[in-house]
Structure formats: C-alpha cells, structure tokens
Image (cartoon, rainbow, N blue to C red; front, side):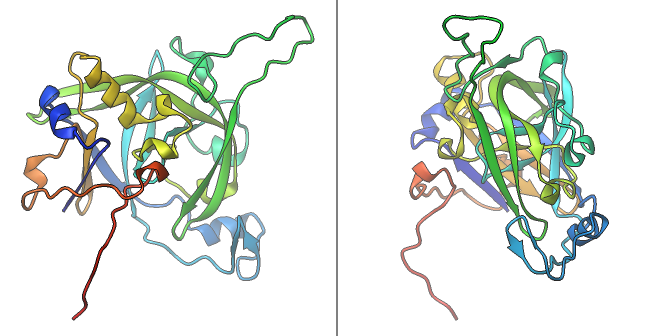
Length: 290
C-alpha cells in the first residue's frame, strides 16, 4: 500500500505546475544493537532502571524495522544514511563538534567543511554580530532540543545548533533516469545525543516529512521548501507531496506526488485534522467492528 500526503489543500494545482516525480530508493536495515544489549554494555540494569524516561525492561524489537535512504549535505557533499520520518519536522544530523559515543558511532556532519553552510537562527536568518563588538563579545544564537521516541528502542533527546546548507537527495525520475533533487534548507546539527536511542539506530540522521508545525521554522521544513520552489517557478520543481512504499527488503520515497506503479487503486483524499500540530492525522467520525 502507498501512503500519500500533501501540504496544502490545492495540491492538485501545484502538481499541475510541477508534474514530475523524484524517486528515492530505500533499503531495509536493522538496529545496530538491541537496546538492552547496549544498556548492559553501559552497566545499566534494564530490569529495574528508568532509562531516558522509560521505566522497566526494553523488549527485543524487529531487527530489520528501518527503511533508510541516502542524502548528501553541503558543498562538497557529505553523505549520510537517514530515515524519513513523517512525525518529524526537520533534518537532523550528528555534528562533527559532538564527541559523545552516539555521535562518534555515526557519520557526522561538518558545517565548517561546507562552502554553502551558514549559522542561522530559528527564523532562518543568519547570525548577526551584537552591537559593540569586542574581544569579549558573546554571540547569541538559537539552539534546539529534540525529543525522540522510537517504539522498542527507547526515548532520548538531542541538542544542537541551527545551520543552513544545501541538501540533495539522489534517486531517479519516474522514467528511471538518475538525478538529484537539491534545495537550500535549515537543519539541526546535534552537539549532544543521549545513548538511547541513538546508539542503537542504524541511520546517521533523520529527514522530517511532517508539517511545519513540527519544524523550528518554515525554512527548516522540506515540504515547505518544495512548495516555495513551485511558487517561485523554479526549474524542475517538485510539488509538496510525497508517497511512501515499503516492500520486503526495499522501499521507495516518491517526492512530488504518488508513484502510480505502486498504487493498488485510486487515491482518496482526506483533509488533515488539526494541521497546526504538524502531524498527518485524520479525524474518524464513526467505526464498526464485526
């Protein structure tokens, strides 16, 4: 089955302006270590301890429960394996300035190595020097703390800096032609990450596919950036719509709409309930059992 989502009610008109699709191949991967094995290695009693806000033992989880893709960030490009998360609102990567175990066990993003990177605040605007700049001047910048809850893996938190850089997704067109979809996007470069769940996760970072209510700001939301590209008439723009397909070992993220080859039947559209909350949720008026 395919799950398709849209940012705006008039997505049909946007899709007409940008009919092309960009397909990103996903591969199924398992956890690096079961969470209880990780905690045992850290000397934590998983039978009695409360870890990252979750009390009691953590159960074994599906060892191959993640579908991951590859993105590149920066110029020159730095490649990362990521999960595409419909319940997150921004791109999240471990920073090269993070020296804790969860960061060092993954590929880390180095903003200083990218010619396109710049420090920004939550409004997407670059940092500005304070008045009366001197040798003892303290620059003030916005930071963010993100909580992550992953079923079976545990709950945790990350703190990071806000960066603007170029992000590219490799893949193909609907006709199988290789290519990239690139955009300038705000992202979170994590400077601190808790052991759980990050040391168990098989991916370096997360690309959020949620609505802007889950984002630091509009310039940090991938779907908003796609919508801006359409509105600006950018060449090869994609509509702010996506579809997800999960198979036995591989999957697919379709940006720009739904891949008709993956559909079992016609799409039926339903409005998002409380879109300001940022989640792809729908209202249920009635139901029946039996």
